[in-house]
Length: 197
Image (cartoon, rainbow, N blue to C red; front, side, top):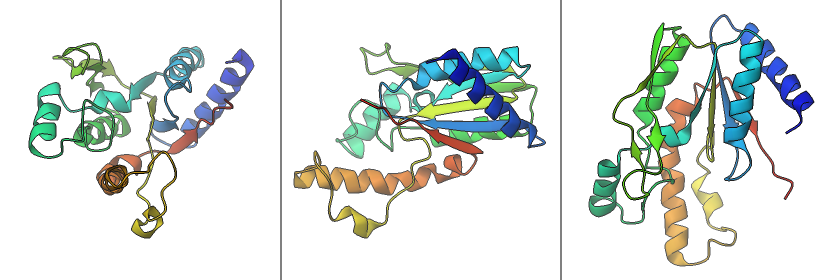
């Protein structure tokens, strides 16, 4: 990413923050490999140079623990393998985090997820990260801000959703998106990354 673009984006984010009388929650949506994590890392550095305490958090950091996901898979929905789809996150962690940031709390609890734990299934770290007051929270993920579609619009699903089982899973995932709305409603802004290739 070009430095000029990152500096311009950082300045735009600071302006959005200054228009508020409180911290800013800035969402970043992008599919895997679009550079969300790299973008956030660079923005945190540039925002610090601009006098803003920024912290990046991923939707991944809200995954349920490995044990909880195993129970969901074995007792509720065998299709929720490993991690990723709606229904594998502990949404209340995100809502609590956002509320702490928006309230301007001095010490904010951020849980982190390590994908290398639990034989590659990943697990939440045992201790949270405690961060002092945050000016800007960058919140990134592959379906951050995505709202459920009208059920009728799910009658004609595109490839690669072909089989009846895939269609059922798509519909169920869409239904689970409504559980994320309390989180999405706290986003002040949502940027969508569109890869060229």
